[in-house]
Length: 125
Image 1 (cartoon, rainbow, N blue to C red):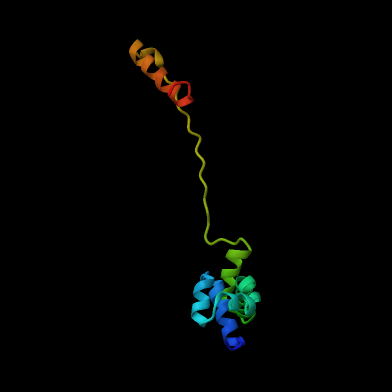
Image 2: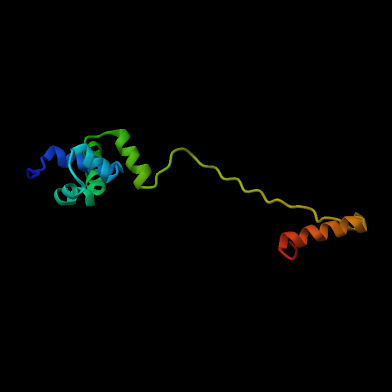
């Protein structure tokens, strides 16, 4: 069997497929090689594909920001710097509930309520 020599295009394909979450068996089939050949010749891409792809994306994003891309800058500020759009207004209202008047309950209603409360607090099952 001839020796496999990875090309730069093949390395890039493996890196992109790994970054996208493609199973190793599918990657080997796409390159028409066996799993042992894949592991032997593409070890770095298999282990670091996601990180390598992320580094390239971040490098590209930085270039866009340096070139004055407003959408890229906004994206960075929202996702990495904690910026938010718009104004947030939080209204807190104190809710006061009048105490319940259990004196108007019948003996049967009180017993039913007691049973339900005991179930809630776990005394009965």
